[in-house]
Length: 264
Image (cartoon, rainbow, N blue to C red; front, top):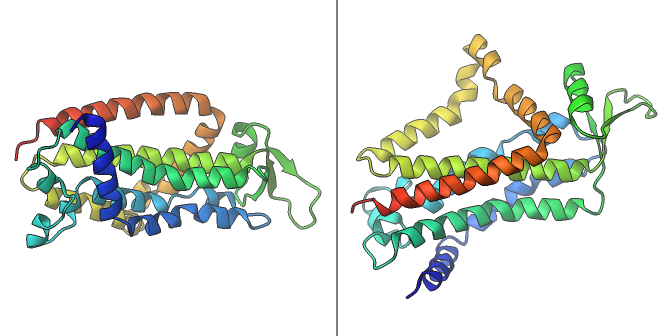
């Protein structure tokens, strides 16, 4: 079987093996619900609670053995340990898993972009004066709305809905690339599951831990970094997308090369 047929067969197999995962992808379009409100808070729109789910679902797609227990690892039909024993080109296998992951991430974001085309403009509320000033100075075309009674904190963003959808697309792609790199970096190690779950727990419980470490929380707070990154993204989208596409290509080539060297 040639490479293209192997790729297509693996993609179909993964879709049939993980049908429930597409139900989970519906949570990624929740920004559409927020944007349907008259004046949604900007902080709520650019927040990334879905990014943890991208990491979790991405790990399940790439290496379900990390989530399996005991003998279940040998029963995962599309698990990496099992497929490494089959007559499959390892590079094609890594590419098929990555393709499935990126399609899973891209699909809901593309739905958000398409749904935003009908009414692209957006008026958001900003409760922080600093955030409002950053929005006006970094988001192209944004203006302060002053003709709405009782709403002095509104900012109008041309094509704002599309911008928010593109922001979520970019962040989910970035997290998917990081997860893929992390999984394949850890996979050759004997204690990969322990290392993975330690990192996973650190990410999950970091917001709680940061409450008891105020200086660190202020310095590396996810919310503050997320806002700065969003405004930088809005001001330089062409640069961000160019660098992202180059990085994705580099990550994919590295992961495929590392995957082909795995021993079983």
